[in-house]
Length: 341
Image 1 (tube, rainbow, N blue to C red):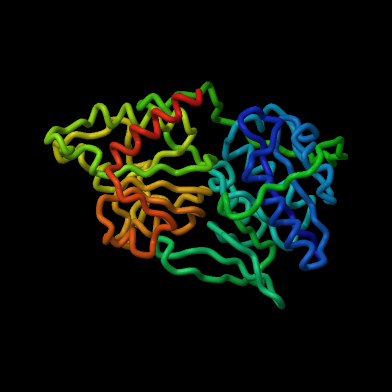
Image 2 (tube, rainbow, N blue to C red; image 1 turned 135 degrees about the horizontal axis):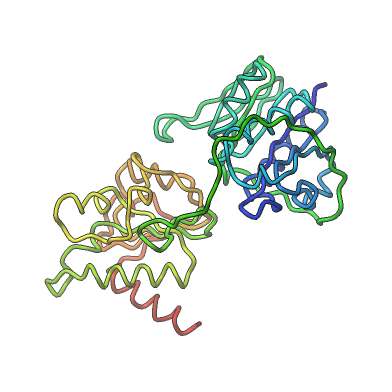
């Protein structure tokens, strides 16, 4: 039987595999074991041997491409590397992390090899055939896909599988030669976001969601948007949480209302935003309506702070609800966190 190939890539350091890549290795091991197929892991990195060290106990054949050309994401070099690895492995199915680096590359590679591709895959199942599951229509409908075309490329949604964990060691890596095209682009540096502080942290254990209530009048009849911003940023800094937002809070700036200056549409979750996958979530705004519930679908432990015990989020959507004023609660939480540092 043809092998299962898992494509992986290094992070910005060039010699350490990303967490999403290790998640793809876990999915590949499970699939190869179920199909009784050989497992091959392809590594794209500056130093493929160093990057492959965590895979010493993966019981897989390791192939890799190395070189300074692969230190940064670039379509021309990444596509050439992935194509070379695929031709060397001749796989039945190709699994890859749905990272920005491979998301821009995988479709082109599949076309070069005469294969097909599906993205945003969340699970792999099926008994007689391989069935790939993904969500459609803003995470409302789950569907299963099965194809006969080979090779079948599947981009796995980050956070849907456990990252492969094994004792690192020296592992033999078969070097694959890559014929690079003329490289017309180069990475000259990194520029931070204009907002200054990074508030989106996909690997954070906690998702903290703010709502429009933070910039409305408080019990004293005044708006405390500046204090709210400092309180939220302080909590994020002490807890390491990721920040999400409702659409109403993100859109307030265009309506001439007080805003939290560090929020952008990238923070937005729900029907018109993202659907993050954090272990825990704390909502400080009403998430009872369907668009917001969609955004919280894949959160493990869901908790909320609300003044309304009868809101839709409280009634059956959250695991734990605190009936209190979110502003006052977070002030107290910040004080407790400050005492621990």
